[in-house]
Image 1 (tube, rainbow, N blue to C red):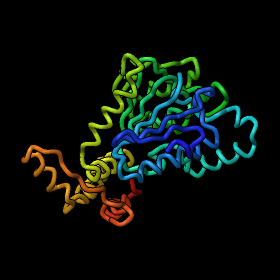
Image 2 (spheres, helix red, strand yellow):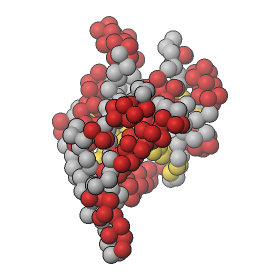
Image 3 (tube, helix red, strand yellow):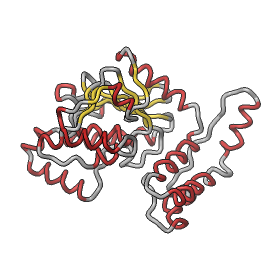
Image 4 (cartoon, rainbow, N blue to C red):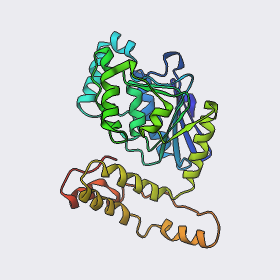
Length: 291
C-alpha cells in the first residue's frame, strides 16, 4: 500500500491501519505533496473494510512540525493555495476534516509543532512517547496561531493553550506536562514501545462494533459544536440510527454465548438519513455537527 505514497508509509497491520509521516529529513513537515497524500491515505483506510482503527505516527525524531515553511517561502502559488484553503475552511488535512468514521489514534513519537498540532487536536485518542515535545511557533515566525490552538481548547485549559500560542517556539511542553493538561491520554516509556502500545490499543478498540463506534464518534464530536440540549437531541439521532442494526442483537448474544461478536459493517452514511448529521439539524434547528 505504501508504494503509492512518496512521503507516507501507509499499511495495514491486522485490523489496524497505519499512516506514518515519512519526511524525517524535514522533521516530517508536510509539503504540498504530503498534504495531498494525507487526504488520500485517510480516505483509503477509511474505505478499507478490513481496517477498523487507524493509527497516525511519524518516522524519525519528529512526529510532524507543520507546514513546510521553506516551500511556502519559495512558492507563491503554494502560499495562495494554502490561503484559499484556510479561508474556505477546507484544509483537508486531518481525519476530522475529511469525515473519517473510524477511530483514529494519534501516536506522537517526537517533536510535534505548529500545524502538527492539527492532528493532536483532531484525533479521537492521543498517546505519546516519553520523548514527545509540543510547541506552537506560529507567532515566532510572524504567523497566527488559530485552527490548531482553537482545536486544542476542546481538550485543554484555555490559559495553557493561550500561553503556548503567545510565547511561541520557546514554550515547549514535555510529555508529562502535556498529559497533566489533557493534551495526551497516555505516555509510553520506553519510547521505542510506542508503536507496539498503539497497535495493542488499536486492536482492543477494533474488537468493538464498527457501526456503533462510527455513530458514537458523530455524536461526541458533534456535541462540541452545540449547547447541551441540542447536543443531546443530535446524539439521540445517532443513537436510534443503530436500532434495527444486526450488531444490536449480535452483541448481547455473543456475550451470553461467551464468544467474540461477529460484527456487521457500519451503516453507510451515504444511504442512511438517520446517520446523517443534517438529520440532527432538522430537529435542533441549528447548524449540524462536524463529521
